[in-house]
Amino acid sequence: MKHFVGRTFSKVPQDGGLNYENAVFVDCLFDGCGSAGAQIEAVFVDCVFRDHDWYWCVGHSAVFVRRTFESSDLRGAFFTSSFIQCRFVRCQTGSDHLGGTTEWEDCQVSDCVLEETVLPLVKSRKEDGWY
Image (cartoon, rainbow, N blue to C red; front, side, top):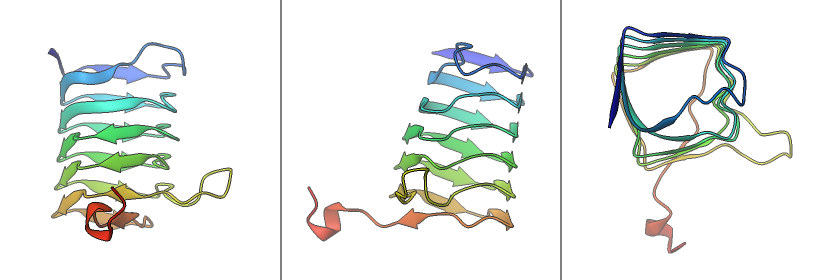
């Protein structure tokens, strides 16, 4: 597992190689990075994501602790992920460009602050007999 501590990732383009799988990020800044469609299976502690693009991402069992999401596009799918003491400011979480809804399934949200952001939380589809 890779560890990144105190790093700044600034204006990394869509194909710039940011890998959010099997990694731990502590006290990192992600500023204006393009990561649409990313696979997110990492742990983020005390990180800031500013003007970040996670459009159509897939987050599975990701963990976010004391993290700030600021003016970021979060119209992706998160499953069984945890958001603890996070701050969401002016983030996009609505419908995608094709009119589909953004849903975060089975995610845990604890002690988070929402400013001009609505989180698209949904319960488990297992309970509804979907699979």
